[in-house]
Amino acid sequence: MLFLQLITCFSFMQICTADETKLKVKAASKPVRLFTDEELRNYDGTEEGQPIYMAIKGVVFDVTSGKKFYGKGAAYNALVGKDSTRAVAKMSLDPKDLTHDVAGLTEKELESLESVFTGTYKSKYPIVGYTSRRILNEDGSPNEDFKPEDQPNFSVRAEL
Ligand code: HEM
Image (cartoon, rainbow, N blue to C red; front, side, top):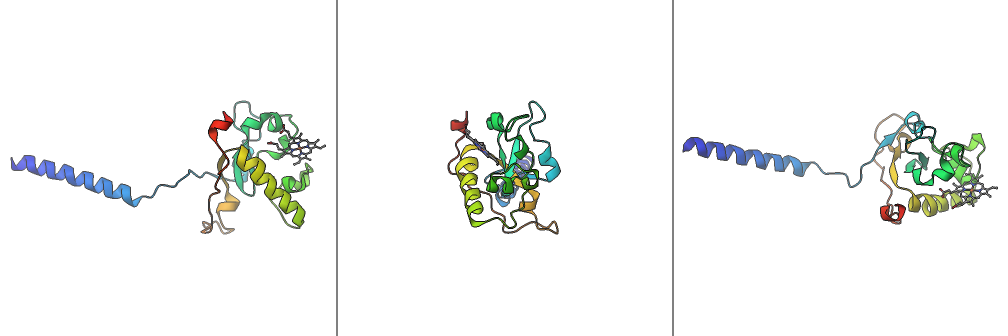
């Protein structure tokens, strides 16, 4: 009888400890994947069947549903597989603008960037992660100020 009580007590303790462990671990609200430049290049639309990703302001969007714009040989294929913030701000496909670098952009270009970022990308394409440049500081330590983007206008149902 005592043996049975001990077993029951032990099992109960295990459940309690497990619950405690669960409570201590706070789940992230959305999964966040980090992309290096090299990783992002794998999603440039070259490989059939592979998703197509593009980053703007360090936010990585899955633009596969816009394959007619971004797929291999399509008009905006140069923008994908990388962070194309500058190109989008300037509405340019010049290779020198295919970069995350926003140095020297005009007020108007920055406004245009915000408008396309929110009005087109955030409302049309799901966010799949962030570039390492946005999540990490230059010395590789985590950027404590990092905050995932809200995507209030995006609905998976609308995309299907
Ligand atoms: C003669 C020049 C251009 C014309 C006539 C043109 C035309 C268009 C049109 C009609 C759309 C909307 C397509 C649709 O929603 O079905 C579009 C979207 C777009 N264009 Fe252009 N475009 C031009 C140049 C550029 C350049 C230089 C860039 C460089 C970044 C650019 C970037 C984009 C982007 C990012 C979209 C959004 C695609 C999406 O919805 O995912 N366009 N363009």
